[in-house]
Length: 119
Image: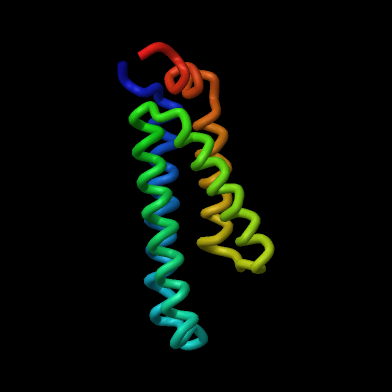
């Protein structure tokens, strides 16, 4: 049984979030305000977060219902950290919008039926 359209779109949105995180991380290398240890920490955190979004998105796509909970929790923590850190506009706002859309679609009825239904 193929995943329903809302779930497919949600997974693509999570993968776009991961790619935008990698883009944002790469752009930090050209920002003179971000140097040394901060640049290294930013790079490691950005890459790890992108890998987590990619992996959890793939697991949701493969009908691992627990991954939907993990992805929702991870995205919520990420959103709170962005708001608390005072992340600016541009990519951070786009990440928030895509994250909310991905979460809503991932928890849509069709997606839930697919993830929790009989195999």
